[in-house]
Length: 256
Image (tube, one colour):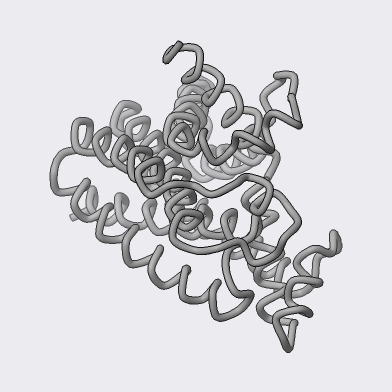
Protein backbone atom coordinates (compact mmCIF):
# COMPACT_ATOMS: atom_id res chain seq x y z
CA UNK A 1 0.00 0.00 0.00
CA UNK A 2 2.81 2.40 0.92
CA UNK A 3 4.72 1.55 -2.27
CA UNK A 4 1.63 2.12 -4.41
CA UNK A 5 0.98 5.50 -2.76
CA UNK A 6 4.61 6.52 -3.22
CA UNK A 7 4.62 5.52 -6.90
CA UNK A 8 1.38 7.47 -7.42
CA UNK A 9 2.86 10.55 -5.78
CA UNK A 10 6.06 10.20 -7.82
CA UNK A 11 4.08 9.77 -11.05
CA UNK A 12 2.02 12.88 -10.37
CA UNK A 13 5.12 14.93 -9.55
CA UNK A 14 6.85 13.78 -12.74
CA UNK A 15 3.87 14.67 -14.94
CA UNK A 16 3.61 18.08 -13.28
CA UNK A 17 7.28 19.10 -13.29
CA UNK A 18 8.44 17.62 -16.59
CA UNK A 19 7.33 17.09 -20.16
CA UNK A 20 8.39 13.47 -20.26
CA UNK A 21 6.03 11.44 -22.48
CA UNK A 22 3.71 10.09 -19.78
CA UNK A 23 -0.09 10.18 -19.84
CA UNK A 24 -1.51 12.87 -17.53
CA UNK A 25 -4.48 12.13 -15.30
CA UNK A 26 -5.41 15.76 -14.82
CA UNK A 27 -8.18 15.31 -12.25
CA UNK A 28 -6.09 13.10 -10.02
CA UNK A 29 -3.10 15.41 -10.44
CA UNK A 30 -5.02 18.46 -9.24
CA UNK A 31 -6.38 16.64 -6.21
CA UNK A 32 -3.14 15.01 -5.10
CA UNK A 33 -0.35 17.45 -5.96
CA UNK A 34 0.03 18.72 -2.39
CA UNK A 35 0.45 15.16 -1.12
CA UNK A 36 3.09 14.58 -3.80
CA UNK A 37 5.15 17.62 -2.79
CA UNK A 38 7.92 15.59 -1.12
CA UNK A 39 8.54 13.90 -4.47
CA UNK A 40 9.57 17.23 -6.02
CA UNK A 41 13.05 16.52 -4.64
CA UNK A 42 13.16 13.14 -6.38
CA UNK A 43 11.85 14.48 -9.67
CA UNK A 44 14.40 17.29 -9.49
CA UNK A 45 17.13 14.69 -9.04
CA UNK A 46 15.74 12.81 -12.06
CA UNK A 47 15.88 15.98 -14.16
CA UNK A 48 19.44 16.54 -12.96
CA UNK A 49 20.38 12.98 -13.91
CA UNK A 50 18.99 13.48 -17.42
CA UNK A 51 20.95 16.72 -17.73
CA UNK A 52 24.11 14.95 -16.50
CA UNK A 53 23.64 12.27 -19.14
CA UNK A 54 23.29 14.98 -21.77
CA UNK A 55 26.50 16.60 -20.51
CA UNK A 56 28.29 13.27 -20.93
CA UNK A 57 27.07 13.11 -24.54
CA UNK A 58 28.36 16.63 -25.19
CA UNK A 59 31.75 15.70 -23.76
CA UNK A 60 31.89 12.66 -26.02
CA UNK A 61 31.19 14.94 -28.98
CA UNK A 62 34.04 17.19 -27.88
CA UNK A 63 32.11 20.47 -27.88
CA UNK A 64 33.51 23.57 -26.19
CA UNK A 65 32.51 24.44 -22.63
CA UNK A 66 30.52 27.51 -23.68
CA UNK A 67 28.65 25.67 -26.42
CA UNK A 68 27.91 22.82 -24.03
CA UNK A 69 26.57 25.20 -21.39
CA UNK A 70 24.19 26.81 -23.88
CA UNK A 71 22.93 23.41 -25.03
CA UNK A 72 22.48 22.24 -21.43
CA UNK A 73 20.26 25.24 -20.64
CA UNK A 74 18.23 24.51 -23.79
CA UNK A 75 17.97 20.79 -22.97
CA UNK A 76 16.76 21.51 -19.43
CA UNK A 77 14.04 23.80 -20.76
CA UNK A 78 13.02 21.06 -23.18
CA UNK A 79 12.72 18.46 -20.41
CA UNK A 80 10.65 20.76 -18.17
CA UNK A 81 8.71 22.56 -20.88
CA UNK A 82 10.25 25.83 -19.61
CA UNK A 83 7.64 25.66 -16.84
CA UNK A 84 9.66 27.60 -14.29
CA UNK A 85 11.08 30.08 -16.78
CA UNK A 86 7.52 30.99 -17.69
CA UNK A 87 6.78 31.66 -14.02
CA UNK A 88 9.83 33.88 -13.69
CA UNK A 89 8.84 35.93 -16.73
CA UNK A 90 5.23 36.30 -15.57
CA UNK A 91 6.33 37.39 -12.08
CA UNK A 92 8.66 40.04 -13.44
CA UNK A 93 5.96 41.36 -15.76
CA UNK A 94 3.33 41.38 -13.03
CA UNK A 95 5.45 42.71 -10.18
CA UNK A 96 7.07 45.33 -12.40
CA UNK A 97 4.04 46.43 -14.42
CA UNK A 98 1.10 46.22 -12.03
CA UNK A 99 0.09 49.07 -9.74
CA UNK A 100 -2.03 46.97 -7.36
CA UNK A 101 -2.55 43.36 -6.40
CA UNK A 102 -5.42 42.72 -8.82
CA UNK A 103 -3.58 44.24 -11.76
CA UNK A 104 -0.40 42.28 -10.96
CA UNK A 105 -2.34 38.99 -10.93
CA UNK A 106 -4.09 39.95 -14.16
CA UNK A 107 -0.77 40.60 -15.90
CA UNK A 108 0.71 37.34 -14.57
CA UNK A 109 -2.25 35.41 -15.98
CA UNK A 110 -1.83 36.97 -19.43
CA UNK A 111 -0.06 34.58 -21.83
CA UNK A 112 1.72 37.49 -23.53
CA UNK A 113 5.18 38.43 -22.34
CA UNK A 114 6.35 41.98 -21.65
CA UNK A 115 9.65 43.81 -21.41
CA UNK A 116 10.35 42.80 -17.81
CA UNK A 117 9.68 39.16 -18.63
CA UNK A 118 11.93 39.13 -21.69
CA UNK A 119 14.72 40.79 -19.73
CA UNK A 120 14.37 38.26 -16.90
CA UNK A 121 14.52 35.30 -19.29
CA UNK A 122 17.57 36.65 -21.12
CA UNK A 123 19.46 37.51 -17.92
CA UNK A 124 18.52 34.18 -16.34
CA UNK A 125 19.74 32.18 -19.33
CA UNK A 126 22.96 34.18 -19.53
CA UNK A 127 23.66 33.66 -15.84
CA UNK A 128 23.12 29.91 -16.14
CA UNK A 129 25.42 29.66 -19.13
CA UNK A 130 28.10 31.77 -17.42
CA UNK A 131 27.94 29.63 -14.27
CA UNK A 132 27.76 26.27 -16.03
CA UNK A 133 30.62 26.89 -18.47
CA UNK A 134 33.42 26.80 -15.82
CA UNK A 135 31.95 23.59 -14.39
CA UNK A 136 32.17 21.98 -17.83
CA UNK A 137 35.96 22.21 -17.66
CA UNK A 138 36.19 19.68 -14.82
CA UNK A 139 35.47 15.96 -14.50
CA UNK A 140 32.02 14.63 -15.26
CA UNK A 141 31.28 13.12 -11.82
CA UNK A 142 31.54 16.33 -9.74
CA UNK A 143 29.54 18.20 -12.37
CA UNK A 144 26.88 15.48 -12.43
CA UNK A 145 26.54 15.56 -8.63
CA UNK A 146 26.22 19.36 -8.65
CA UNK A 147 23.61 19.33 -11.42
CA UNK A 148 21.53 16.70 -9.61
CA UNK A 149 21.83 18.63 -6.33
CA UNK A 150 20.86 21.97 -7.90
CA UNK A 151 17.79 20.63 -9.68
CA UNK A 152 16.66 18.63 -6.67
CA UNK A 153 17.04 21.36 -4.05
CA UNK A 154 15.60 24.13 -6.21
CA UNK A 155 12.44 22.08 -6.74
CA UNK A 156 12.11 20.81 -3.19
CA UNK A 157 12.13 24.46 -2.07
CA UNK A 158 8.84 25.16 -3.84
CA UNK A 159 6.65 23.13 -1.45
CA UNK A 160 8.18 25.04 1.47
CA UNK A 161 6.79 28.27 0.03
CA UNK A 162 3.45 26.52 -0.48
CA UNK A 163 3.44 25.34 3.13
CA UNK A 164 4.18 28.70 4.74
CA UNK A 165 2.14 31.02 2.50
CA UNK A 166 -1.46 30.91 1.31
CA UNK A 167 -2.53 30.83 -2.36
CA UNK A 168 -2.85 34.36 -3.72
CA UNK A 169 -6.02 33.52 -5.67
CA UNK A 170 -8.80 30.96 -5.66
CA UNK A 171 -8.11 29.68 -9.19
CA UNK A 172 -5.01 28.28 -10.86
CA UNK A 173 -2.62 25.41 -10.24
CA UNK A 174 -1.40 26.63 -6.85
CA UNK A 175 -4.88 26.88 -5.35
CA UNK A 176 -6.06 23.57 -6.82
CA UNK A 177 -2.97 21.75 -5.56
CA UNK A 178 -4.22 21.88 -1.97
CA UNK A 179 -2.41 22.68 1.25
CA UNK A 180 1.11 21.33 1.57
CA UNK A 181 1.93 20.30 5.12
CA UNK A 182 5.11 21.47 6.80
CA UNK A 183 6.20 17.86 7.35
CA UNK A 184 5.66 17.01 3.67
CA UNK A 185 7.65 20.03 2.51
CA UNK A 186 10.35 19.39 5.11
CA UNK A 187 10.73 15.77 4.00
CA UNK A 188 11.47 16.78 0.41
CA UNK A 189 13.87 19.53 1.45
CA UNK A 190 15.61 17.13 3.81
CA UNK A 191 16.06 14.53 1.07
CA UNK A 192 17.74 17.10 -1.18
CA UNK A 193 20.07 18.35 1.56
CA UNK A 194 20.91 14.77 2.58
CA UNK A 195 21.96 14.01 -0.99
CA UNK A 196 24.18 17.10 -1.07
CA UNK A 197 25.74 16.13 2.27
CA UNK A 198 26.48 12.57 1.13
CA UNK A 199 27.68 13.44 -2.38
CA UNK A 200 29.39 16.82 -1.97
CA UNK A 201 30.16 17.05 1.75
CA UNK A 202 28.94 18.83 4.87
CA UNK A 203 30.24 22.28 3.87
CA UNK A 204 28.28 22.53 0.59
CA UNK A 205 25.18 21.13 2.30
CA UNK A 206 25.41 23.71 5.08
CA UNK A 207 25.90 26.65 2.73
CA UNK A 208 23.16 25.39 0.41
CA UNK A 209 20.71 25.19 3.31
CA UNK A 210 21.60 28.72 4.46
CA UNK A 211 21.23 30.07 0.93
CA UNK A 212 17.84 28.38 0.45
CA UNK A 213 16.60 29.72 3.78
CA UNK A 214 17.60 33.28 2.86
CA UNK A 215 16.11 33.13 -0.65
CA UNK A 216 12.91 31.48 0.59
CA UNK A 217 12.45 34.06 3.33
CA UNK A 218 13.00 37.03 1.00
CA UNK A 219 10.88 35.60 -1.81
CA UNK A 220 8.03 34.70 0.56
CA UNK A 221 8.05 38.30 1.82
CA UNK A 222 8.11 39.69 -1.73
CA UNK A 223 5.30 37.38 -2.90
CA UNK A 224 3.18 38.22 0.11
CA UNK A 225 3.72 41.94 -0.38
CA UNK A 226 3.14 41.90 -4.14
CA UNK A 227 0.18 39.53 -4.56
CA UNK A 228 -0.76 38.32 -1.09
CA UNK A 229 0.68 34.79 -1.26
CA UNK A 230 1.97 32.24 -3.72
CA UNK A 231 0.87 31.36 -7.25
CA UNK A 232 2.19 28.88 -9.79
CA UNK A 233 4.25 31.70 -11.25
CA UNK A 234 5.87 32.69 -7.94
CA UNK A 235 6.74 29.03 -7.35
CA UNK A 236 8.37 28.78 -10.78
CA UNK A 237 10.27 32.00 -10.23
CA UNK A 238 11.51 30.71 -6.88
CA UNK A 239 12.89 27.59 -8.55
CA UNK A 240 14.77 29.67 -11.10
CA UNK A 241 16.21 32.04 -8.50
CA UNK A 242 17.41 29.21 -6.27
CA UNK A 243 18.81 27.26 -9.24
CA UNK A 244 20.94 30.24 -10.29
CA UNK A 245 21.96 30.99 -6.70
CA UNK A 246 23.03 27.38 -6.11
CA UNK A 247 25.03 27.28 -9.35
CA UNK A 248 26.81 30.44 -8.21
CA UNK A 249 27.45 28.87 -4.79
CA UNK A 250 28.89 25.62 -6.11
CA UNK A 251 30.94 27.36 -8.82
CA UNK A 252 32.43 29.64 -6.18
CA UNK A 253 32.95 26.75 -3.74
CA UNK A 254 34.82 24.62 -6.29
CA UNK A 255 36.89 27.60 -7.42
CA UNK A 256 38.02 28.50 -3.90
